[in-house]
Image 1 (cartoon, rainbow, N blue to C red):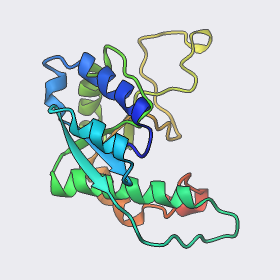
Image 2 (cartoon, one colour; image 1 turned 30 degrees about the vertical axis):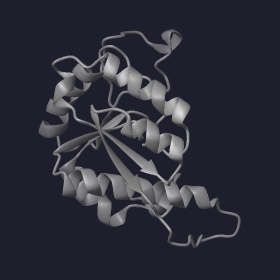
Image 3 (cartoon, rainbow, N blue to C red; image 1 turned 60 degrees about the vertical axis):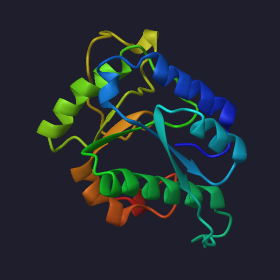
Image 4 (cartoon, helix red, strand yellow; image 1 turned 180 degrees about the vertical axis):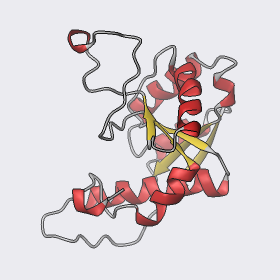
Amino acid sequence: MACSRADYLKKTIQSILKYQTSVALKFPIFISQDGSHPDVKRLALSYDQLTYMQHLDYEPVHTERPGEIIAYYKIARHYKWALDQLFYKHNFSRVIILEDDMEIAIDFFDYFEAGAILLDSDKSIMAISSWNDNGQKQFVKDPYALLRSDFFPGLGWMLSKSTWDELSPKWPKAYPFRDEAFIY
């Protein structure tokens, strides 16, 4: 997911390509750009290993409350559009979402391949995330433990089509999601 930060996006793409092993080749790479920043588009199109998608949203934003940030509505629209494209146009059964400022670890693709088995077999799992706010060394007792969370950690997450089928029609108008706007 990208918008206008070509320098960050380049680091993310390089990080992904660095760890493209035989497992990683099972994961086609798509860049979804929100808007028309020319440096981001030029960068994305310079890589043969990925598919470029561009979300151009010229609809005016009507906030629900005074003082709300218009960018949050634009981000929500972009995510919905991109996920609809990947699940319904490209017909993927699962999608991993990264933002343009993330760099991945060496075991990223192996982690998500293993996580896909859990996601497919346990319908009570909404998403698999590679991010843990509490994953710092001083908080971790077992670095090999996989923990379940009751909140959405975001930042490097995998979603299934069946979950998106449920979420897409009720996707919130703005991000960050307000508690009352997104009920599971």
